[in-house]
Length: 292
Ligand code: GLV
Image (cartoon, rainbow, N blue to C red; front, side):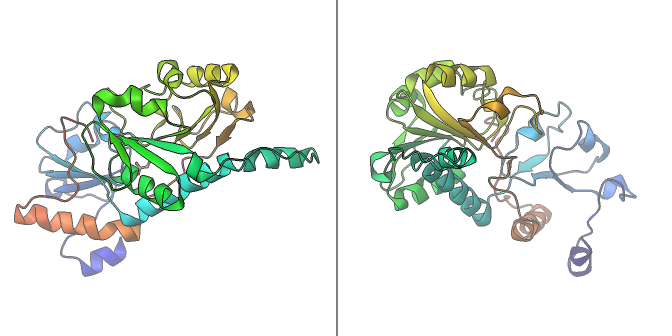
């Protein structure tokens, strides 16, 4: 913040240090308490500090006239690529199971999968989804992607809105990278799991709100799903008595798949500030209709 204040042609405040609320034109935010933006009558832009923007729409008093942006960042994409790749390889090579065997000094070889024989479906084939898909395809996985609107990515089969069922049919691993909206809330449920091949594996790196927790447990119990890697949860931190902790088929990570890096993200924020001042189109604009 100090460095920015010294070099930049604008001032940076935290909510506690704002002296004159009229002065504030742009807000940078992550899960601000509801009503936070109403204090600034001249606010023009609210920028989410992460890729996700569901936290903005949770605030009923989000000012209607303000433009919204999010972060699209190469580092964020690379981190997500590496994380999902690690989870896919961990799953097909049984590494979590071997870590569990080791705890019991158990020598127990298992059948392993090969990337070329595994189809990974990316549910939510937007910026991050496409980056992840390309990385997995480069490593040799069969990759398909589903998004509301058609996407063209070389070597990856892309499905759209009315093709969800046929997309799901072939996914040995399903990676959720959807935005969280009214349409996608709870989409990872028994109905969807039933459409996957039996024994599929789920990776959720989007939002906890996509997943019906109870349905995941049921699908693991029935063997419809063989396991899941979950980085996000309906309530974070995950409560210590949540049944997920006790399931050996679930690999839990504490929302760390890909985290915005201030240094890497700052240039696009500064660029947007200048664009706002010049009355130009902003980078990485969020649609209020689509909510992503
Ligand atoms: C993290 O969850 C993000 O949306 O950037």
